[in-house]
Length: 291
Image: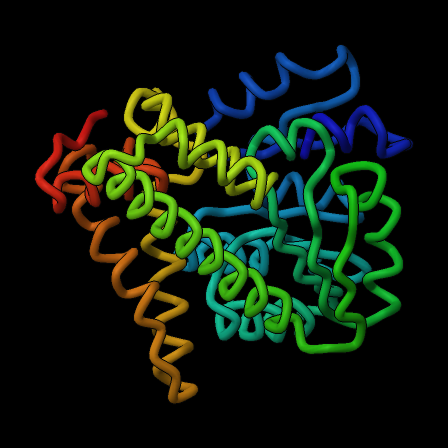
């Protein structure tokens, strides 16, 4: 996302980067065109020097802590626009929107759908929620820059965006669970994984076929860095189950997927990927975790 903002965002000034781990900020800057970015030493410095601030953090606690620090910025937040791309509980989004706006700033929720390769290619899908006037200021940096499309929830509560993001991520969990069970059955029943993969590629081109390929190749356990880490996947599952319970809905598929994700954590720790569900299903089926 940062690379595409720098290369395609038509910025009038160098992009300012901050990461809680300084070396990660330096590593990121090293991948960008020379002179197109600068590193802020702290959050306050970044906020004071910026008009539009994008945030993207891994969980609710990290985001809440960051916003708390932001609100302590000297000279206040007047005329600042905050765009949060984190995947968090919608209650968290709504609460932080209220906090930010109470300090004189604008707030737009903008979680994104798409794997890292899609982010690299500027092919994400952005979900935007908040005041329409604020969203209009963000649009020049979404479609055609970091994204291929927008889902626009203008003038709806900011939490509607993260609500969709959480519900949408359950589709990913359920997809991986279905593929994992299908491939385990294909192997044990004699159908064969290649035959099943041919069916998937014909009937369900796109994400289903891509994940099926990841399972067959062993990418689900060989990858050094996860594409969708097991810890984050379980966080999303917890949020989905909490929302379901509060709404009087039973999400049995998500419950099963979360149980398998817990097995992935036990087997691989934080390096586990959501696709590791396949390994958990294999173990449950009397096969080795690794294919």
